[in-house]
Amino acid sequence: MSWVGRTAVEIAEAVRTGKTTAPAVVAEHLAAIDARAATLGAFRKVRIDEAVREARAVQDRDDLARLPLAGVPIVVKDNVEVAGEATRNGSAATPAEPATADHPVVARLRQAGAVVLALSNVPELSLVAFSDSVYGTARNPWNLDRTAGGSSGGSAAAVAAGLVPLALGNDGLGSLRIPGACCGVLAIKPGLGLVPPPVHNWFEMAENGPLATTVADTALALGVMAGDPVTPRAFDLRIAITPNPLPVGLSIDQEFQRAVEEAGHTLREAGHTVVPGRRVPAIVGVSSVAVWYSCAALDVRGLAHAKLERRTRTMAAAGRAVRSLHLDGSRTRDRWRANGADQWFGNADVLVTPTLAQLPPKAARWGRRGLTRNTLLNVGYASVTAAWNLAGWPAMTVPYGRHSSGLPIGVQLIAPPGAEAQLLGLAATLESARPWSRHAP
Image 1 (tube, rainbow, N blue to C red):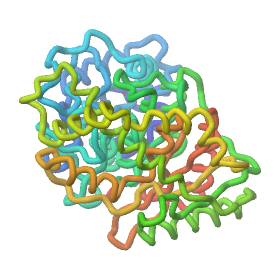
Image 2: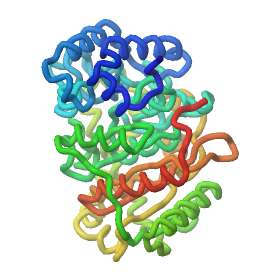
Image 3: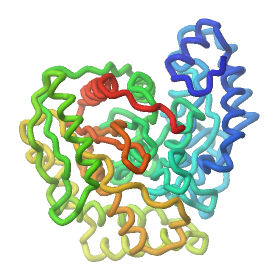
Image 4: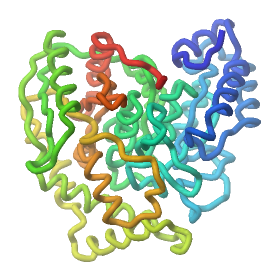
C-alpha cells in the first residue's frame, strides 16, 4: 500500500503504530516528486539525501509513539529558514549562504516528527500572486497552463498534486489563501500572534500557516505551528455572506459568487444565522496596493539591483515614491487594524466571501514584465484577501465546488482575532456537506 496521497493524520498514525516507517513514507513521496517535479515546477530544491537522513532520525526517536506528525513529509516555502539550506526567496539577489538555524515554525514541525522534503518555488521576494522566478514557474495541477497562485504557489501545487500532505507557506496580502483557492486546497492565515511570523513580516501583516487537503490535517498542522493544539468548533454563529465584497466597479466571477451563496445555505442548514454582508471600504483596497508597493521597497534594501527582476525593480520604485509622498497606506492600515475592521464587521461572527475575484491567470514569467501589467493582473484576480492582512485577523480558504472551467473554487472565511477554531469548525461543516476532490486528477 502506497502512502502517497494519504493524509497527514493517517501517515502519522501509521508511523507511530508501526504499520509503516518514516523512511518508507519519505522514499515513496520522493519518488512521486521525482516523477512530477519537472512539469509542475513546484520546487526550488528537493532535499533527497537530507530527507532520507532526517526520516531515519525520526524513526529512531525514543518519543516516536507520541509525535503528532511522525514521519509526515512536508514542503517549506523558500522564504522560511531551514537549517543548512539557503533561503533564496525566489531571487538571484538574495544570499546563497545556508541558514544556521531553523525558523521557529520549522523547528516546531520537525520536533513534531515532520520531515522536510523540499523547498517550494515562490515569486521574487514573494511579492506577487504568481510563483514564477529565476528558479522556475509553479503551475496549477488542475491545469498546467494556469498559475498555481502565489506567493506560496509551489507549496499549494505540491499539496494539490498529492506530493506531500502538508506544506508550510505564509500570507502577507493573501499568499496562502490565493494559491490555496487556485489549487483547491485548504489554507489558513492565523491572526496576529498565534504563530511565529516570517522574518519579513510586512508591517506585521504576514503570517506563517499550513496548506492541506483536509480540515483535520489543517488543524493538526496549525496546532503544531502555534505550539498549542487547535480544536475546530463552531456553534450558533452569526455569519455574514458577501458574494462581492469589492468596491463598486470591481467584478467577481459569477460562479464564485454562487459558491458563496451556496456555502451560506449550507451553513444556515447547519444551524447558524446567515445575514447579508457589506462591501469592504474602497480606501482599504487602495491602501493595500500602496502598502504592497511599500513592502517591495523595504524588501529590496541591501540587494544587488542588477540581479533583481524587472517586476521587482519597478514595484520597489513605486514603493519608494509612495513612501516619499506619505501615501504608503500606513494610516489607513493602522486605523483599519485599530478599530475600523471591527466597526465595519458589526455584530457578525464570521464573514464569507469568494477567495478569488477571477480565475487564475496563465502560468508565465510575469517577473519579466513591469509594474502596470503585474498590478493589473494581481488586482484583477486576487483582490479579495488583503483587507484581513491589514486588520491582522485570521482568514482561510476552503474548497467549495468546481468552476465550469474545471478549476476548483475557494470560499474565504474571515473572523475577528482568536477565532481560528471557529473558522476551522465552519470549514469542517462545509467539508462534510460538500466533500471536495483532495487532489487534482
